[in-house]
Length: 305
Image (cartoon, rainbow, N blue to C red; front, side):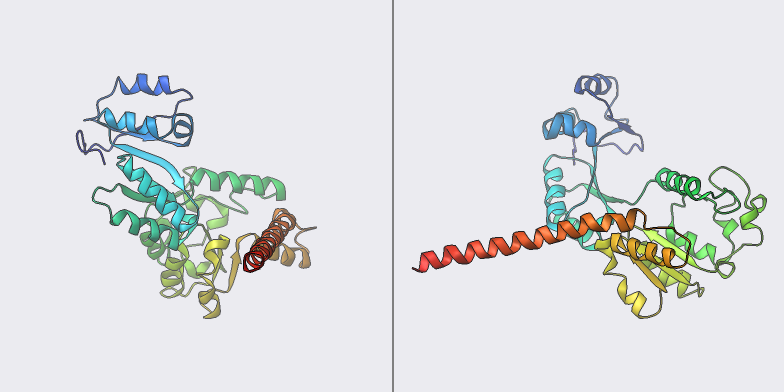
């Protein structure tokens, strides 16, 4: 972290420009003692680590917003490289799983000067857009068939309050409409009023649903997680704490098969169609591994001869 002009300001100025010159022009107009700056993927791709060092050299605390997501060792190495650049804060995408996040944290913990490490789950605007797309496709009406309540900054607090009264967490929907004015939510107050709770998550959020929604309030729960995280949640399924698990693309394809069998879907959609490409990719990986081993054995035999 840059220590020459460290600030306690909560203001973070985004350097989201198509050209470095525009970012420099803005930096010349702001004071590093009064704000911090964010360098995202666009600017980093255009200008690289040298630009990060240049900004740090001007005395700014830097939030390097690259949302790392890869295998644990790769992400940990990237976070360590960001620390070498002198950034104040760096982030990872939580869909990479607990192992990825903990490995990154452990790598940074061993450094004498280390940045803050935060995780990104999903932007609420993406969730609402996805709902609108699905609603249009299947002829669903907002307020009658589905509602988007928005985002709560505290998952734990929200889960506990939902066991008592949903309006204590979300007095209105994301559009500002009081819940009592929404037909779908009239008479709905707590977990007991839901036939089934479905948590679709790219973070460790399902653990909290199991602990509080199920363990404390007795909710019926189905989990949906990325493929890399699904293995962490199979024990909940086996223990009966979750009634179902949609794991990654394979889980999505299986869910679509159930919908087709029940007559709710005419044919497989994105999940089922995408399995072909995933299967081909897996077969290609297996073939390359086999070829690599054959090549190694052939070279070894030649060496022995």
